[in-house]
Image 1 (tube, rainbow, N blue to C red):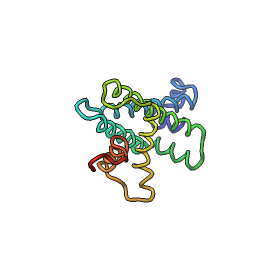
Image 2 (cartoon, rainbow, N blue to C red; image 1 turned 30 degrees about the horizontal axis):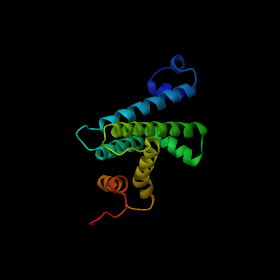
Image 3 (cartoon, rainbow, N blue to C red; image 1 turned 180 degrees about the vertical axis):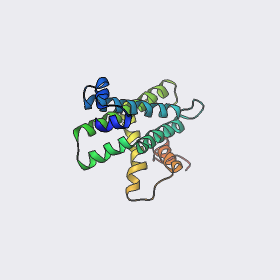
Image 4 (spheres, helix red, strand yellow; image 1 turned 90 degrees about the horizontal axis):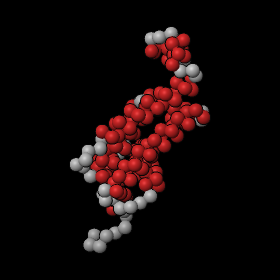
Length: 168
């Protein structure tokens, strides 16, 4: 609370006027981060573009947002190194909101006939984790993939699949 008050340029007592506990302040910060992240993802969606181009841009924005914001990086680091419940809970909340965003986007695309009917919840999970694997996990041992390479791989796996097509 001392650090927050110092950063805000106010007395510690002023912080307690708005937030009764550190947990309440922490939750407010996480909720604000989630809202900003959602705004960035929504701005990445353009009605004239294809479902998958929009999905790729939105997911890219979400993951870039997580990389740019020190708090999300600190939370990720703390979960990896210490396993603090509060940090894990915040990251789980973050991921749940990302999954909900993708799920709603999938439901809308299904309703508009832009993609075939599927289970939006499971599909959102697969999409997010495939994207994370291609963007973050791959980089642990290999040269990073470009945004275009990630988009092409997502298209191959999610749009076309790996099954050979007649005439190929």
